[in-house]
Length: 207
Ligand SMILES: [Zn+2]
Image (cartoon, rainbow, N blue to C red):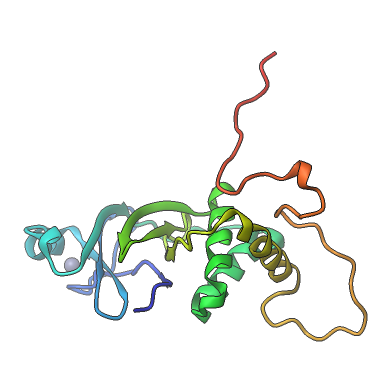
């Protein structure tokens, strides 16, 4: 079972192969095939004629949702730092190495807090919570298991994430140690400023 994966939204119905038009409604069915999660994007016609009846009784059914297909706008390039947390998450998920399980989860939580990912669905599999995150611009979905981190493991993972954000997955060997770069992950040394992961204070101070 490949627990982590990324699946891009299709540009055509995966049943009849007709291209989606701009603003066309589509249906996504997520199922749990033997070795992987499988995403199926369907036009309304195929959904209604072939899938709608008994969709959630299908083997391995996890979730179904509806979306509106939009032709990719000519988006301005993302600022480099903003892109890097997501880029790193994509690299980690594609690597599919259990040693980065917790780091992937922490990155997904960070991106969710910055509203660069949103939780589309969550479910339990073999007692483990699995989150389906959606990238709100590309509609890619990321399947990320909750590593069920203990508080005393959090520091270590946050340091790993900070290191990865700073140096990347495969850093080039550098001659001299570099100054630490400040990233959006709390450090052990300034415990007073530490912010719990997964929570966000949005209430402004009352005047
Ligand atoms: Zn179709």
